[in-house]
Image 1 (tube, helix red, strand yellow):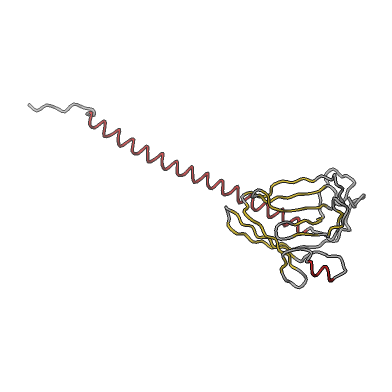
Image 2 (cartoon, one colour):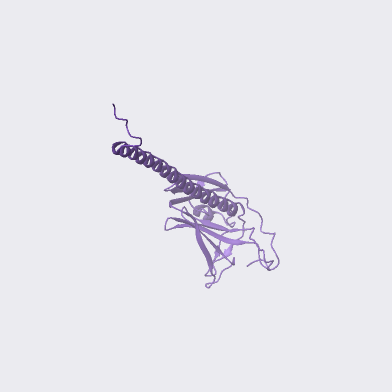
Length: 213
């Protein structure tokens, strides 16, 4: 009489089943880990892209609101409405927000430059400054390796500085504003990015009471 095989798993079958389960679980974990890493990378990419878009939006707003208004610097010397080279730019803009309704000008002096691989934006509370005038500065974009500003003159030629020195020396009229500003950013994340911003040159007539500071 033949012996009937007992129901259930043998030790070998149990070990094989456990091995298969372990392999499947490892594959599932690896797949989930890949998905989570991809999601994190995607989230980080989205955050950096949003920061880049925000930086360009602020730049565009400031430059398009540039006005032909000279200032006095910390030492009382007159400075053109816009002054800059290929690394730094400073200019007067309109459109300064005044949610508190204070009696002040809607004009503001703005500057951009690079510091510690960050695109920095500075702003002054007054236009005609004294030596104790304070300014606020903060990073606009991180991971910036280099920047280059260029200025489009009336002859539609790009210049590396503004005002252009030789033209300023030949012309007795005060320097105005360029027609456009080009900014090239070299970023570790995005490579080389080139943007051109139109300068509207709005007249500084629209000021609140007490303008000039």
